[in-house]
Length: 508
Image 1 (cartoon, rainbow, N blue to C red):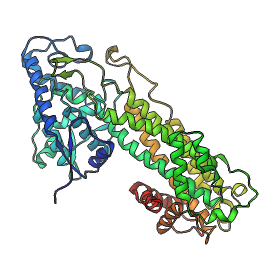
Image 2 (image 1 turned 30 degrees about the vertical axis):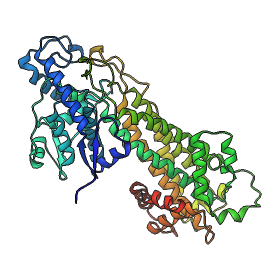
Image 3 (image 1 turned 90 degrees about the horizontal axis):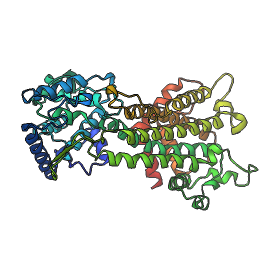
Image 4 (image 1 turned 135 degrees about the vertical axis):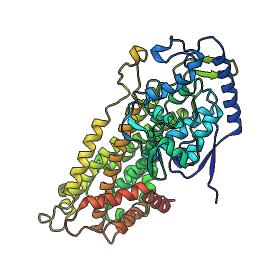
């Protein structure tokens, strides 16, 4: 049975399609109109390479060596040497999904027809993607100046049969991985090495998968908060439409509407309609305002990514209409760097308010429930340290939320005198995403225990769906046990998408 396919043309790739490719769920093909642009672009490069006029990256050196003219007989060596010399990455390889996303994004940029790549080189890249030959790309070493030079060079190594690649679960020498997939490396011609290493695709690969994860976590933050609200017998009134219509931030309004759907048909709210409490703490009452602000930040980041993944970020760019090959600065990663910093900050504030809600749950002076939600507290510590773990994750997330986008270390003998640190922003954002997932898992785990104390009265239908799914994997805690296993179980429900799907189904 054939798999679904997507056509790439350099202009219409979506973030959701990138996720499909990262998960190896679809086949990727080049759109016919894109193939024609690639051929035309390459024809212009070949004409320039055959002439004697200096053209950056085609018959000159790179960076501060741009004034060094290269003989025609050495053009192949020039491109090969560029790849070899720039493959300076260190650290852990990008995870499989991120590396696949990186390869896809590079293909999509080449498909725009402004790179001057040969069609056969792009065909090899697509074949690698479809046969799951995934380059080993160390995740550290990019300052986001001429884009992600080091990560992209490691990607390009495999094209020429150097470096390493993953194939069929094995980490292999690139030439062996290509051979097992029935592929042959290419010999790079004029400009091709430069076409493969200039661009923002590494930061975009990490950033896109982070963005999609962050959007799901923002939705789950409402679920976690609603479960806590119900466990603490909080008020639903702060979420009524009138309040949010008079401060009409879209994210705030969307969050309030989502909370109303999660809380609909609550039996618990009916048990305290005439209680003496006037106001809930901000971590409950201000969820639309805080979660909504995070949504706004994520909306900004999505817009930046949607533009960037379909942008020409090479240098120089090949314009066939005017027959010009022009150096510019589209490789500079500042837009992505700023966006990824915003994503990290948005996720950190979701973690921070979540941790405060956990404190509301475990503190008997605030909850009216047994201390740390433990039966026979004293003998049992209950969820005491779950809150401590959440606090630790929030503290580290705050450190990681220091922006990378305001930093710069000049490189390339001062030619690249302002850099973006975009990959740094994406990588630390990814770590913040891991922490946010764990914080929300902890909150939902603790909130489920609080809801146990409210039985047989039930929460709203969205909160109930989450509670029941959690209880299908994690039983009520009668006495102390290894809580890290419970946190992992709930985290797995988050990562698989099962928990969010259950809530969406219940609130549709």
